[in-house]
Length: 283
Image 1 (spheres, rainbow, N blue to C red):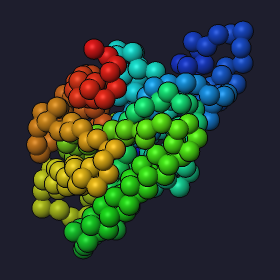
Image 2 (spheres, one colour; image 1 turned 135 degrees about the horizontal axis):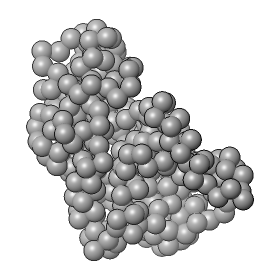
Image 3 (tube, rainbow, N blue to C red; image 1 turned 180 degrees about the vertical axis):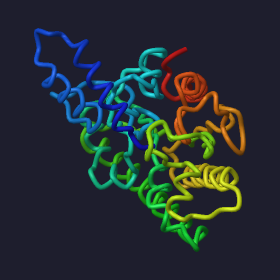
Image 4 (cartoon, rainbow, N blue to C red; image 1 turned 30 degrees about the horizontal axis):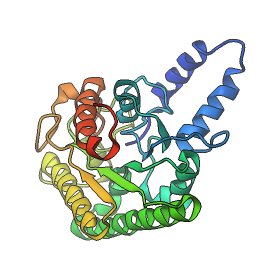
């Protein structure tokens, strides 16, 4: 779920071109960037729904060259988020930085639900560590994801109740849809989740599509397991939206792990329907 530097540069340039010339575009950009990526805003921005996510929610610093889940929920379904979203973000980073507290501060007392799009980067980072011990490394990483996710929820709810009172938050986490490891990278070197990356680091697997699909299924199963231990966590299954196991359809993908605009439209439609009973927004 990494960001692509070249495309990002183009997006920032377009962003500046369309800014209000009466304002300093750099000031506006920095303010919007801090608010959307780290929930550091100019005061409280009340919202009923929070969001903390990786590049499936915001691939390019809020610049909609690829309309991921967050902008589509905002523009098509009327969501107003208090959020911290940025491509490349890991669950480990979110917990270490205390972003759950900043999102709660930003959203205020009326916030009831926080949507989470996290975990993929924790799984796919440092692929060379998997060499020779795929089951062991995966088990270790899944255990860390579970511990971090539970810490995020428990500390977030305790903070929300201590500061604003009322009921604990509901936390909605989605699993990802299947990668397509045979997609070419958009930019050379930006090949997370691609067979080319496996080959480059020396990770030899009998079948790249089966390997990535099995990891994805195991991650989704882990999320279901955590919901049994944390009653305020709600899991949403997005698998089989982009074509089904073992690989999502190439015509719906931007690269190995990200959908294109059409793909994200299908994913957002499904996500919006599944979370409506908890958010009461969009339909």
